Length: 276
Image (cartoon, rainbow, N blue to C red):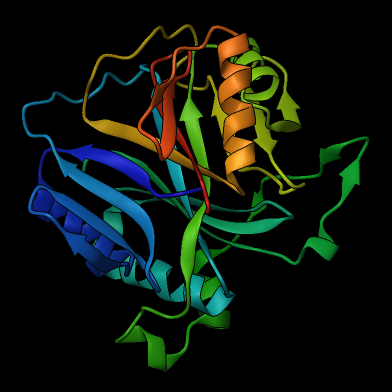
């Protein structure tokens, strides 16, 4: 997964959250378009769009951007930093068996997950489905066990990438048809009528779609929040095959020579490009 683009109203407040709290670095500053990430890898792109309105609470769109940290220490540093600077943005934490995750809302209500993966040797698969759960994870104990003095003042510790993107959609059947049958992800978990998790390369999930707040939602208007989901495939052949498959299914695409862009059934904009 590449960086997630967010359309934002208060650019300064959003920069402060992702730079000073989450502890990402500003990689580029084009005035109204700010890219933040770690070690040169973009994670979040903020586009200043003050003329747009906020989405409704039951609209389709972004559920959360999930930022994956290399180590538990790096995760603890970021969680502690957010908790100190934006304490009221914390919404929960869970041990998912494959990962440990902490959840927040940024200043404009976009969901943010900060997480660390256990080694794949510790993951369990049953009949093609990854085993995940939602177990209690004590945030204070996690910080006590993993936070070090050296990262309290300098929380940028190791790399971070977009691990997965979780969307709010109108129904899971349409999500499966689009993201599995057309786009080509593999289903890893299904919660019938509630949520769908998909991935490539046997990851637990690169994307997820749920209807918990958005059941029955139709196509989105252009609002603040999710601007673009970026997906990276290994090579040009993969991108070409995807272009042909989307044409076969009648999905309208836009090709700029480097990536193809298209809308899912809820007008969430998806862009796919080649790593090469």
